[in-house]
Image 1 (cartoon, rainbow, N blue to C red):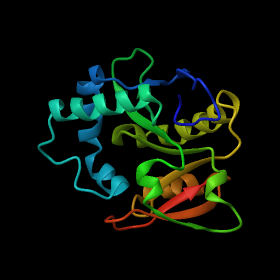
Image 2: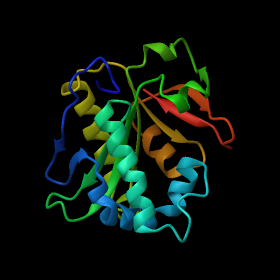
Image 3: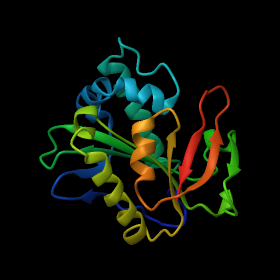
Image 4: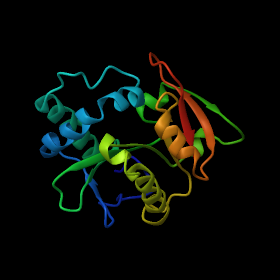
Length: 197
């Protein structure tokens, strides 16, 4: 069963001329690690944690990816790696959760208007490696994701989440026609997560 129960099965991949999304696996550890370490300062803001630490290893990353792969297979959450068209480099990641995912269920969610959290069909987090953010890939990925969730997943109420302290991604999203729908505070984390739809 999919994490997003309104669409079964979830689409296996998304391909454009610039990148390919497919479910992440433990075998992606080395490529993913290179992207994570290049982008670690942004990811620390995005996740509101000290991870990844400067001494984060490929093997530690492999354990994380195996967990993501297992959650994807079990339908608890969907995790995708973003690869170059040849599949030779990781460009980022995309994570899709239902609103009742454990960490979201523990969060305090405040609507910005009349929206209802339970009506949201998919909660999406994404990141792009630092060198590709500089070329605007994050904006092109967001555009592709919005179309993908609407057309392939057949979802009408998808939201995109970032942390207020990750100002580059906040600015990116706020330059689109997406509007802030909710604010989300996770226990033990500083900074507010901003939810756009």
